[in-house]
Length: 388
Image (cartoon, rainbow, N blue to C red):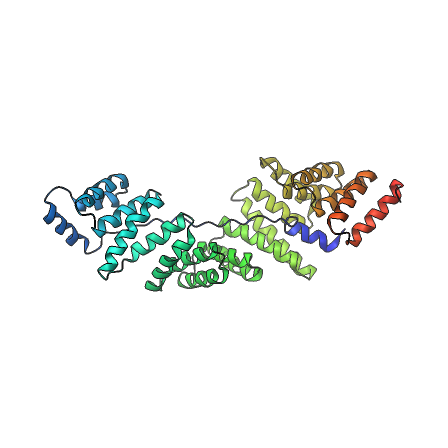
């Protein structure tokens, strides 16, 4: 019943959808002592005797003993406040400790000092871009990431980071261009594949996203992020397909991807995704049992899960269970037209005509009094309640 409307609602989670979350994979900076470092250390030793040991400070940094390294570098800087490499390593050490805000000032000063001498330090530029990204300050990150990308055109990581910054600034086309370039340089990087496919998904280029995700899964068949996004992309693509057979093929692919994901993790959100895929593929018994498990595993079920479970109960004619879940969905997100539509349908099948009429009427009013199916339902139930 309700034909295309049913397919649209189920495939995208009753219009609210599942929020797609993308994240920047933590990148560890491994910075080696530059060839000029020994000369810098010798010059410092000449100036300061044995008051401090710059090479020891660098060694502590390389060993991951960042707090100790910072203390050593600060001792150097107390005597030579404009020593660029000590500032650089101090900033990098703060970065490694995830003290991103504290890393900005010494990294920036080091870069300024080196640029005054006509030197570029790509590690510094990248570190500043990463620090600003880590702080969620993408506008500030962008100049550094654009600079490092120009300096190192064949470095895939630079293009990837630039794409991440553009994406978070809602510059989708620039993000996609940068991510495509990153993938050209490193075609088997599944993190880049995932992030690029996510941008394609967000901008509605679903077929291209699906093809890219299949390519990623050929490289890493058990990467959960790829499986989850493939299921979501296939559901959305099927929902928009004009041909029933093409839509069913997409829904079947969504089922396969979601099932594969459950072999990796079986939490509530994964089972909810699989349940939605079963609903779209019209496998209602499996949808019902899967969504029931998702509901049990979810501490605070949202309106979308309640709606989809209620819908699955209705399709298996578990009317009382369907009412319970649909009423819960209406409480969580009041005045949703689809929820009220199906709630009216369930009440009608229970022969509870008065609440059915109330649900249909609310949906009719909220929908602008223009839906002919709702009008037909209201007229039908009004006769049964004697209100016509």
